[in-house]
Image (cartoon, rainbow, N blue to C red; front, side, top):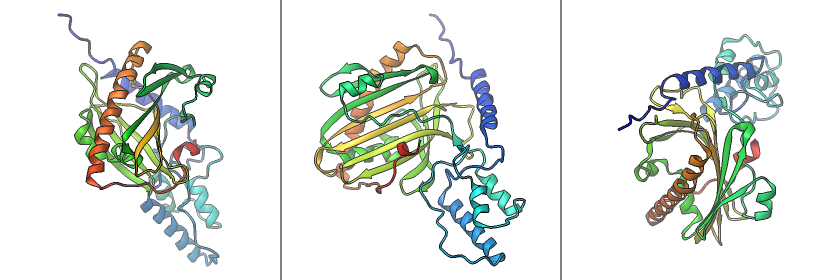
Length: 340
């Protein structure tokens, strides 16, 4: 009876990785300390807009048009050089604004510590074409009538991407979509879920989500923090859900979990006819790094078995939600995948 070795990530490795990520964030951070306009909630946007309005009134600057702060922007945190920052935006709207103003500094500091963890690695291929996939570095792992699973290794990122194509003729696109985003109901049918809820709403179609999931003994449970966006394209009867891991100021790492900091997924649901009619196909592309070395053979075996099982459960959940008649339809909006 050989004693099972504990998860090597349970103690030392999480602390080392956390320290490395914090150091990397500090190195990559903009020298000005100005966080970009991303992951800003409605309440935060209102505060920024009010601050600008009051300062312009104090300076007796004529406001020629209504401020348009609620624009299509990416998640707040570490910003690209070309991305406008919170401080930069405010000072551009308020001439001669005092950058040492306590309220201004408080607004900027509210968003410090929230950023994307890494590049978004999901491609835009969502139609199964062998030639296109093969030429893009994908290899077919499983070919069945119900599922087709493709794999792509990205050595420089130390991740493996999986792409699953499938179809169901007994549920609609809207029902399948709701089974994916109804977090409260998923917590009842997905037994691996320890906790799943929305942390913050950014826009009608974008939110920050916290997800804690159970891992089999002796592995330590994992948790995720990610941005999730939704897109409805009425012209093509397509619904898209895109997720990308982030670090969020309000969700620090906990000793109980190993934080998965490299995660991304995109689910494209395409209706056969109409999004409300039975019959749909899908393409799920995803990757994640569990924070521990796992042999490629084990990864492939997990992906080739667990993902199809999970999608069958999503189908069953979609059938139930369809029977309730209480379905949510996303607003047409720009998807996360267009804001890499």
